[in-house]
Length: 91
Image 1 (cartoon, rainbow, N blue to C red):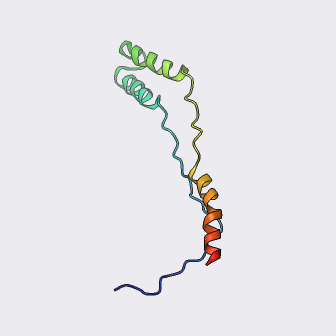
Image 2: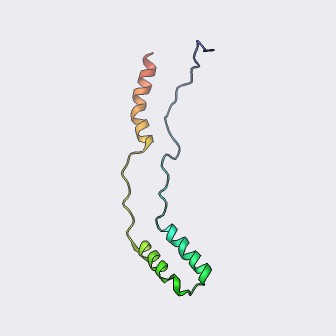
Image 3: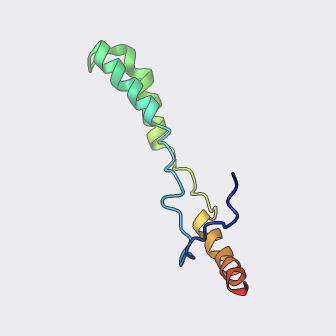
């Protein structure tokens, strides 16, 4: 059965999305877990862990990736909210 009278929702004052962006995972995290696993199995002074330790040092010494300059979804919602609110008032 269809409803002939649609439900009217109250207008929104501000369009917002909570936490639209997720944090980027740390690229050194997997190497660090490998180092910890190697230390747990071979001991802290284990000779077999040197290559993994050097890979972790190289990863930690590398410069961080540049931040992305992307626009957030909240920016676009703010841009279009003027149009949406204006269309709602015309009716």
